[in-house]
Every structure is written in C-alpha cells, then in structure tokens.
Image (tube, rainbow, N blue to C red; front, side, top):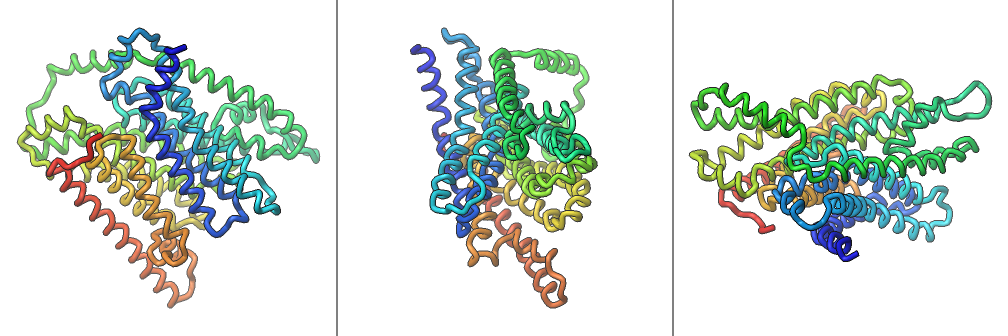
Length: 501
C-alpha cells in the first residue's frame, strides 16, 4: 500500500500548484460571468464549466502524457522498483482529478447561490455533469493518443486536433440524437449510430439535458455505463503504452534520419537564413494541425443537421474564441518554452547569433504560422456561418485576441520557462485584459470585444462613425498591449532574466 501512497505523493507534489491555479481560473471565470446576474447562475455555471472543459484537457493532458519524456525523467521512473503500469495509472487518475475538481467547485458554488434564488428553472448540476463528462472524455482521448510524445508542444498539437475532431463529431451526433424518429408525435433517437456516438464522445453529458421524454430517460443509465467503459479502455491504452522509451514511430524516425544523413545540404549562408529555415521546420507540425482543424470546420459547417442545432448556434462563438486562444497559447507559451530548455538555451547562447535576432525571428515565425495556417482558413470557412448567426465581429476579434494571447504566452515563456505555468499565467493575463472590461460597465470603453461588436450592430450614420472609431481604439489597445509585453519578453531573454522554477 505504501507504494501507491508514494506514487500519489509524487503526483501531488507535481500537480498541486497546477490544481490551485486551475481552481482559481475556473472560479474567477464563474464569478466574472455571473457578476450582477445571479438570477442566471445555472447558465453562468454552464458557460464556465464548458469553457474550462474545452481548454483545460489540452494542457493537463499535455503534462500527463509528455512531461516525463520531455524532461528526461522517464528512464529514471522506469528504473525504480515500481511497475510502470502503476506509475501510469496513478498519473492518469491524478490528472483526471486535477481536471474535475475545478468543475466541482464551480458546480457546488452555483448550487449554493441557487439556494438564494428560488425561482431558478434550471440547476447547476447540468453544468457539473456536462462539463465533467466533456473534460474527462477529452482528457482520456488526448492522453491515450499523445502518450510518450517527446515534447509538450507535440502533445498539445495532437490534443488540439483530437479536440477539433471529437467535438464537431459529437455535435453532429447530438443533432441526430435530437431528431425525430418517425412521423408520430413522439420524438426519439434518429439512429443507433448517433446514439452510440453521443455516448462515446465529449457531449454525452447532454443526454441528461435532452432527456425530455421517457425514451431518452431510459438511455441515461446506458450512457453512463458506456462512458465509464470508454474511459476505462482509454486509461488501459495509456497505461500499457506509458514508459516506452523508444516507441515504434520513434524508431522509424531514427531510421529515417540515419538514412538522410548522407543527403545533408550545405550550411546556410547567414545566421538569418539558418534561423528562418529552423523556424520553418519547427512550424511544420503547427501548420499540419491548422490544416486539419480547418478541414474539420469545413465538414462541420457543411452538415445541415449540425447547423440547425441550437447548441451549435450557442457554442459557435465560444468554440472559435477558445480554439484561437488555445492555439495561440500552445505556439506562444509551449513552443517558446521548448526552445528555452536549459540544454537548448545554453547551446543557442554559444552560437554566433544574437539573442534578439533569434527572438524576433522566432516570434514572427510563430505568429505567421497562426495567421496563415489557422486564422486564415478559419476566417474563410466560418464567414458564412458568422454571417448567418450575425457574429461577423468575431472575424475581426479573433486576430486581435490571438495577437494579445500569443504575446502574453511568449512573455510568460521567456520569464517562467516552464510550459504548464507559462500557459496558466498567460491565460490569467488574457482573462484580465479581455474578460474584466466585459464584466464591469465602467470599463466597457476599453473592451476590445465590445468595441468591435458595436460596429456590426450599429446602422445609423453618425453612430456608425463612432463605432468605427471604437474599432480603431480596439485595434490600438490590442497592438499596444502586445508590443509592450513582447518588448519586455525580448529584454528578459537578452539579459537572461527569468524566475527559477
């Protein structure tokens, strides 16, 4: 028994500050969204839990699946007198606990506030169930697929693609699950495949929300049992794969690199061209992930049943904003942190390349990858849906939000140099800049989203000119914040200033 306790203590020491940070972020979003509107607590809890369940599995799964390998400690763990499956099982369960505890805190807080609002028609239990199932399901899929990746960035990119594949597929299954079974008065399940898809994917928690008739109520116990079986199977996959120092794909990569040694080209003629070539090679996984995400969005926007679903109409703006923030955080915080690891950092500082030159090329290449391979296809493919839902302002808001979040991620990476905490700090800074002005009416004049929203929802001549002036102010605010934090990051990197972690 002491072996399990020691393993739990190891995971607690590793994840305690991460758990505290995630709880603080989830509660801050819940309180900020519900400020002044406590009669709509269940809706606020649902927004907080679903937003958290979309982003958190990417970064918690990234840590669970790749931190031991990237830090070079997996060999040490394998040499201990403990079976690797035991370490993997405890690590998986602790990661799941880190995922679910913030959702439970938000849900119980919502239930407590509901006691003072007796007229509430819904319950925060819906948020706990829907958000908890979504977070656990996404986490299990990401960890099972991304286990033993060499860097956190690779694991995060795999998690992003998995999220963009599972969530639209789940929305499609939910749309068919909500369709009529026949021409009679009773509504039921449109197809067994849709029911199986709902029960296996992140949005299976909504089977409770949509259980209006007796037929759907009967499927709830089956959905719970099936979801548990899916999580257990994915846990088994991760446990069996965990600790493979050189999996099959890594062996194939090593063999391919050995074959290509004889075909190396001549050295680059200048440090600048060498850095550009390096950043391009490092950006290939990011580009492929952006193309995959764009393809998934194209498929989703072409499915009529999903477009007619009210859930998709409600989640589309949040879905795009959270996806853009997640991509920007991964490329900014996680990507820069990988390049600033102690061994790589020492190597680069010994080369005849100025740190500032490396920084600005790396910064420009990272945001160019976001703009060309994520923002551009997402804008093109989402334009019709945004126009239909009257959310065109999002197409201007997403690039500005991406620039702010990316710059904050770079700054935190250069000053913290630890991927998880860089992501958490950058997310906190982004919420302060983007969310706080939306909460307090006195700060609406500096809200980037509100200033852009007014342009679309204004029709009169003089008011339209004022709205366009507000849009220019929004662009100026975003660019100013990005410039300040980026220059601070460059100074910190040049002088080698960072917090010891």
